[in-house]
Length: 353
Ligand code: 2P0
Image (cartoon, rainbow, N blue to C red; front, side):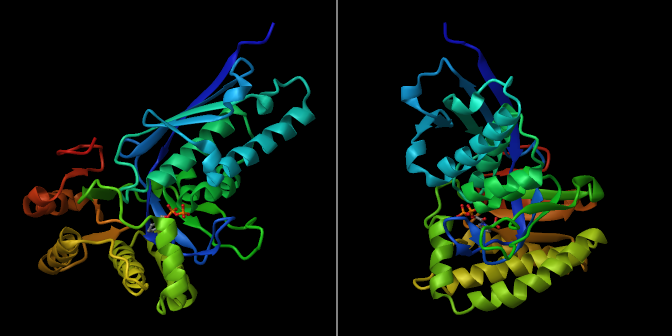
């Protein structure tokens, strides 16, 4: 009689928000970036993906691997990225099974993956980052793989570039690497969250709609058509990576904030410089930029910073001691213009489901 045991692992992965942005691929099939990037991993009390991976000899082979996202079945076969992640993970499990024949042959069983985001998918809130990180972590746990988060980041990267950074907590660098096979294109921790526990992020959900131009398509267009892009990738970002790592090491908020804001602006400048131009920020986003500069000017020092990904939503970084000032001012001035927001402790004012 067939073994009906169901093997199961559940995990969560957090969203990460880049302060030095990944934008551009030097190899689209391996998902190798043109430049290194650096992010802050948000608290799991805030935005996260929850994923359960299971497998069993009793699951019908005819169904193959299955994936449901927020209750909707996804077509795995048409997602080369998901297929690539799962086949790498299976290969690692096969190595374990070959070394120890007493292990159950999980690599031969169909997989069922069920994933849920607690935030809008594909609205510029890094859903693919948390999603692929959680998928890789859940299957790696199910298969009891010994690989470190950095080693697994090589696999998650092939699901979605930014996902490699969500396998680690705190301040995380994704080193672009130089190898053609991507073996050195990995994420590593620059500092744990505990190194700078006062850091806070406020997410303003300006729009929970799906973005106009998906990231992959947008960055391919920027690489192909923007004249500013090469300078950003080759000169501007390498200098900023070193400078922001020093700012994090020294817990120098004004330096961290200025580099973060400038890098967001440079990234959006290369989007505007693409042909046809790509606009991710809108009027409310620009109001948030002005408000940050106004707050810093009135206070007389840099107490907050903005950054925007491939969408209009703003992420505002500040230190805990300035929470009331920064979050309070944002709530008072932009509260009615936005659809919702996510505070550092998962406090929701309205709208975000
Ligand atoms: C980042 N973004 O560093 C940058 C900033 C958006 C703007 O990583 O094609 O979804 O799946 O590798 O990871 C969004 O790009 O793109 C992104 P793919 P991904 O967070």
